Length: 125
Image (cartoon, rainbow, N blue to C red):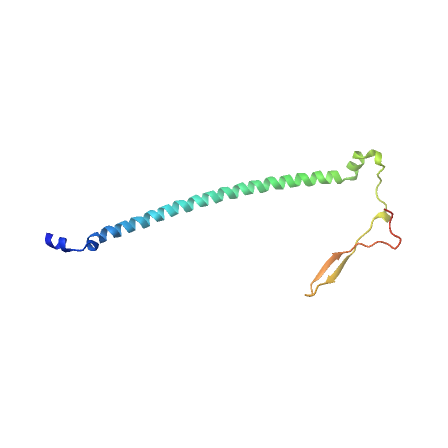
């Protein structure tokens, strides 16, 4: 029987070892891929929560800025900040309303446009 083993080719003798090596490489590659995938899921979850926190902070900041802008636009605040200018509320004749006129585009869509118009006499500058 020893004589038959010596006559076998190298491919036949190393065949089972090569199969075992390939199987081990496939299992190891799968394990590394699984760990990498879990790491990516963790990192994306962390980024997601950081972005949500940043969005919430920006929304709070935006609300604070809107409140500040409303306060700055109020007539009472303007009168307090500029007492010597003699500012008074506008008269109804000083307000110009701009009508929105629909226009038709070549593809039959209707779009509202805002056009400024002045009376014939004009307003003082």
